Image (cartoon, rainbow, N blue to C red; front, side, top):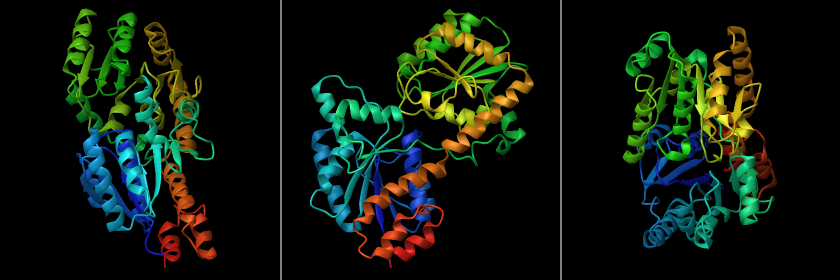
Length: 406
């Protein structure tokens, strides 16, 4: 058999969790001796694919225009034939429609990842969302998303594969952050000396709950607190102005700062006394609580969606009701009251929890296992099939894949 060819399709290569997962899997495929292709509308992370030896192809797969989607189907089909693609793995709804149509009549297997519990507002939206459920295998990034797929689209258990997102422990670990990086970031943010830093990372969109944290800060009424909200408004300038007006109205102008972006999130976490994820709508997974725990920081998240699977209340962090600024303020107060020894115990538990359940290697292993499931049908030689089924697909992939595809 020829070298396995896996094509991932994602709208754009930006800073999000879905994009990170796509890049991580491309790297593991290249490492494992397969050919990794990523189709997207581009983005500032395309160069990462080139550096690792993956192929990037620019198509307008971000578009929801039916005519563009129809044209994309034809273009994707040509790519499948040109590159002899074995698996097409799609991570978003619009390109899922195009790729599903493109795969028909070819040898390529079609699979998807559902990264979020999409809103259902009427039958038209429900139909549009259903593209993500059409894969031979459908990866759900949390139990919450898996249940959403079963409840709303009757996706069979036999097609769903639960794979939590994973992070790079070599990047998100306290020992990796140098004092120089902390000093640089502290100066950039103009943090007052001696402040306890409350940080909320999350793009400026209303459901991320920035206004809930601002209200909690007002309730706390403590001058030793400095709040940093990290996130671009992505064109939502009205919402940013609304937040800034609320900050001034609450008399928090010198204590709450909105930062457009941060290029060194591990250092940002290390600067923080408490990390907050205040989403008012449930997230499919939520990387912030996991990254904060990996860095040994106290995390306060809302008690719904993926956070209920990643935060252990009373052990690694706090879960509070969504939209409840009073309970959020109480949790922040409790986190700030931890003694040095209690913080060390919480950090140790949190870091171990992430290492046991939410690493990039675990996510990659499980994803490659799903690819192997689909490829097994094409493996004619029993010995080759045994190789591709191996649980060591990831750790010994370069040798095993090469032997399997000779």
